Image 1 (cartoon, helix red, strand yellow):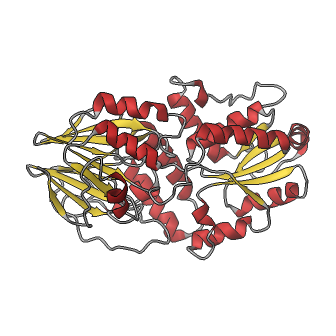
Image 2 (cartoon, one colour; image 1 turned 60 degrees about the horizontal axis):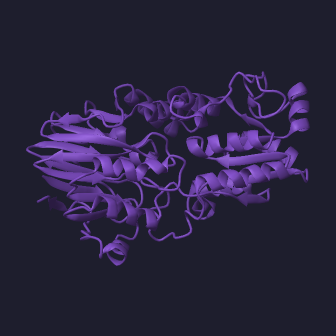
Image 3 (spheres, one colour; image 1 turned 60 degrees about the vertical axis):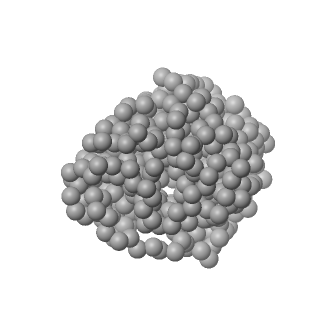
Length: 427
């Protein structure tokens, strides 16, 4: 077995891992590089972007753009595998983006929508064989819903690829039991390290953050929360915080579509993902899709306006100028608050065009920062490594500081720092 990280040994996002055995190849993730990072051009990759793909397949850990955004650059018939619910969420997102005004961006997303139609799906623990290689997905917690680690078996060797994961989300309690049950006799771990230099990124659990939002909603009548439309657990936490604070929950029809995908596919596992979309609750804690109410998706009017002003609300917003007049109207009130629930690095207005746009969107308002990371903290990484006990060592990926692995974890196991495009012989 041979292992190559084509990109991602010293950066967050845009990672590509290749594992080859007896001529068969599996690739894990093929995404865009994050805005603001140094663009690293890829050489053609045989079995992925060129050449014979009859013995290859691409596996995607989750739907974030830095992991899936380059799928249209693969050879057209290359088999791609994604989690079943994750694919539905990604399809909804890309369909939305295919209508944005920028013709170049719109065309890019239209191509992705077409490529999505050919993608295969999998479920947890479903073994998928690509020739001599067996891939087993393990469901884990991340800010993207329906995210996975992968166990790769070939040549009597076992590799655990962590993808992006965390230990402080709503579903994180299953992480260690899952690893104890299925990640046995692992030779190497390919591990993300996004937060290895960010000790304060996970200072709160998602449960603690939900309680803080609930308190804020009780103290503030009109609440606007800027949050990623696909940060599913955060949004459901906001929904429950609104309900417990006896506020209405408001969003546009696109966001409703995302939430329905999750509720319809996962409510059988936990009531956390149940939403009363029929709005039968009375008089407070109700869910409102503005378009369904016959409203402009970005405004309140008539009886709805009277109702929401009586009971108060939490409204999900994005950095779309269409939300601006509504926020501005209510921001004048001392009972109003605007919350920012994204990575604070996006607030550096000078870094990228996206950052500048976001900065300008928020500039008129006083904002409250309330967020916790989607990635593992140091204690979670340590616990995972101690649980799995890889016989050969740990290979850092998805991190800007691979050297920190040696500093922090060398007493637990061997750290194997690779460079992009190094070929590692798995022995």
